[in-house]
Length: 367
Image (cartoon, rainbow, N blue to C red; front, side, top):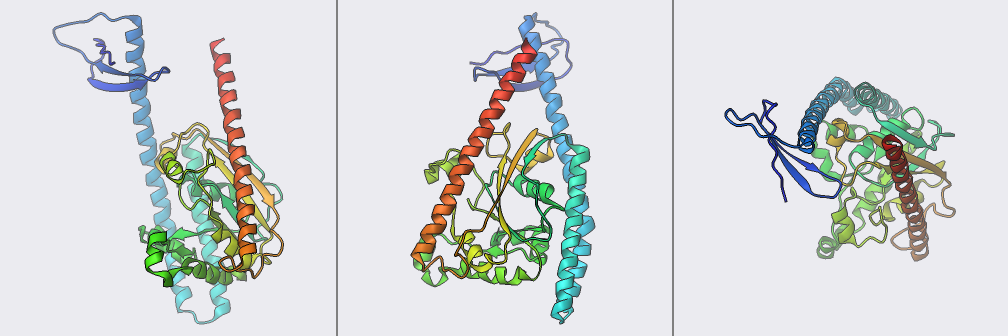
């Protein structure tokens, strides 16, 4: 049911929908009729005023999002030509040792790019950061970073909290992302691994392509052993939303089903080279999935919670074949499933703590 209110003291004509606690929606028509005036209750006036506040907040969010996006784009335009210049020089230099040094230089440029984004975010946004577990990290060690995946915002969050604490993060990306203007080429230049994902039905028709992504990952792992690196893997393979959760029939409450193949390949190819695994849990406790990057730009993500655990590399994994060795496959899947079970419980604890804190804060305000 919808109730219409008319408030004669305002010279604008807007229709808003406000969600009330009991779940209904009110449509508020704010206008100034030239020949008639309608008396309304105090509640109606309060709702009209609330409508004005919501409109101002929406306008402010849109302006903030637009300004933030513009500044991020300008920062990208500043650093990408510099990055591409040194990429070109790297490509024409035949000496392997010098090429490796240029790879280091490219990473420094990328870090400066990220630092610029972080600075822009700090001066334009007020976000409550709740981050734990960043102690005892080093830029001189190599890490496998695994995380749940809630949003595109996750990439910014990870780069922001880990900069100058661990080596530059490199993500496993879907091959289609290479076509994103500017960023796709930048990721390619920084040696990000691009994987082509095939559906089960497609592989049944083209069995010769089975294991192709594993082969790509293996080559990449061998390539990056020249200096400390952080290899990032979102085990779910896609961003969380309730539709995907239902389609997968996931038995986790806050997570999609994890994929163990990519982690197993990193273990097999780089297990003796990695210092530790960084198990990262990202939660936006005040935002219901899906959470979009625009929400971050527009200031609609007030709280970001991150938990980091330092884990050891499992034993006896180097050189193992995930596709052939059933024991290794079972061992890796059990490790991943236990990791995901613990993460699901951790997210539930974070959300429970947040809800309890919000209720306590609200009761203090109303008392």
